[in-house]
Image 1 (cartoon, rainbow, N blue to C red):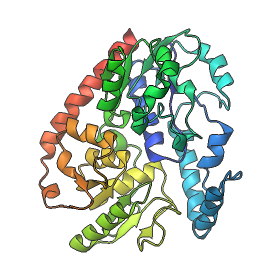
Image 2: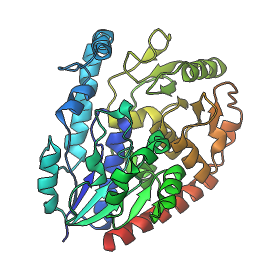
Image 3: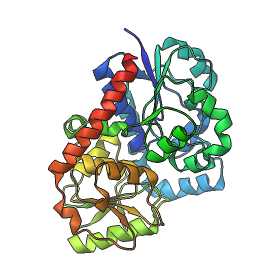
Image 4: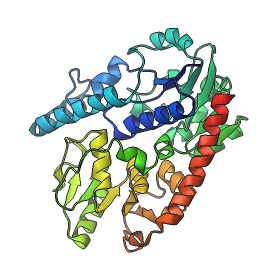
Length: 367
């Protein structure tokens, strides 16, 4: 049986990263088996992902540490919950701290899958996670597949660097990305590329209920999930709180959304994150994976944006599902339509796009 390795973001105390890695690994093991995560994490990335960095590299990181001290107990529990999830649910290779170690051990795999998440986002803002190795920038000795890889907003700058990475992508046997913007960009460069859904959508609600933690909050609540804690999404959560008469809980650590007047619940790992969404009365988010899991669990939710155009990842997904009424500008929040969602129609559309993406994976792995 051939051995398959997945090279992706799977750490970082980030719900989307952890759960997309789990979903893709689980799906590949269902299809062909013998799949594991290539366990790559640099020391630089490790120091930035910790709840309390042992090696802060800037004044910003020092400030982050001080703002988190009042929540130290819950945040250390959060960190342990993420580590427990990784140890329990992800089949991993030995830990590699350098690109050299990854390259030396790449020969152990008959197939390497790159994806998903924003592994091809090389923006300066992602400098501690970004790495050219996610383009497989070394001599080819195995089958190479990308699954729903994402450039994120960096696709707008990618042309400046394409002489560097396009030759690497031409070495892939099958290419797929997560957003239409990535498809358009690569097709214009002569590459045959497919559009696939995020791995988290390859699994259905029943699959996630297998790893879902018990209910975290006994009373009814609104969940706020926003990594950047923008004023627009906070104001939207407060508007909906007043309309529904329910409290809001924020699960993102400080310094984001400080002094917002919204209560935090921070002892939340990936399994608890699923529970927080599953049991919420309403979800307010501007996160891609907040949008995905709210959709999977049929929750009333809005995905908020506050500029002229929504996030390309959310826009692409919700257009595929004909679900764009849940994508709302912060200046014109309307939750009336949200409670009239036809979830039967939604499930049909999810099943269609899921089928296409599963077919892509099957063909790629059997190729």
